[in-house]
Amino acid sequence: MLTISNLHKTFNPGTINEKRALCGVDLTLEDGDFVTIIGGNGAGKSTLMNMIAGVFPPDCGQIIIDGDEVTRLPEYKRAKYLGRVFQDPMMGTCGDMWIEENLALAAKRGQSRGLGWSINKKNRAFFKEHVTQLGLGLENRLTTNVGLLSGGQRQALTLLMATLQSPKLLLLDEHTAALDPKTAATVLELTDKLVGENNLTTLMITHNMKDAIAHGNRLIMMHEGRIIYDVRGAEKKALTVDQLLAKFSEASGGHFANDRMMLSN
Image (tube, rainbow, N blue to C red):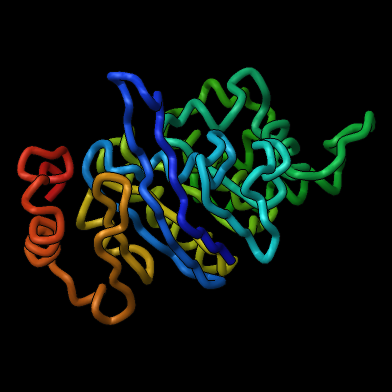
């Protein structure tokens, strides 16, 4: 479903602020893979996700989604392939619009839009059915402005919107980092449910090692723009945080000693 070959990206090349963000990344995801990505600050995690989404053009390399090369496609043309949830709950929804209006926009992702009404009786029933899955009581508040919802409710709604049309690839960029622990656990439970029911190929960035182990069928770790550890299946399930930390310390030469990731044990 996703093939990345020899992906390179350097910001501010030739200046004192030069930063090599990606250094020849190779990555292949099979259909239905749920991959968690961990690594220190500046490891290249978010840059990799932004490159897949088309936010930044690569210096060199290739990105293929479901057999289609998208390496040079602009961000808006990749919309039909991707769903994305950001760390900030405010980024995935429009606060001045109703819940059902936000869902209507999501339902048209990657499609041409005309001048007709996007909300009718049939669509409203479709939206209500899907919002009910969230278990937050929002199915009876479809005409409520999204700006009146809590951060957790907005993030759950954003996740639903990102998966509404079953994208080829779901990108989750630390989508629970801004939430309190209880709400984060609820959103992660919803993530597992939506990913599993729709067999979505998923990349999830997290700084929490427990979450990285508990969710998905595969885990990769990045350091200085490279993938330095890749584990999957039964081997991943058997990992403990201490074992994972030891492997990371070994693979990165101990560079994680003061990293934020260490605080998420």
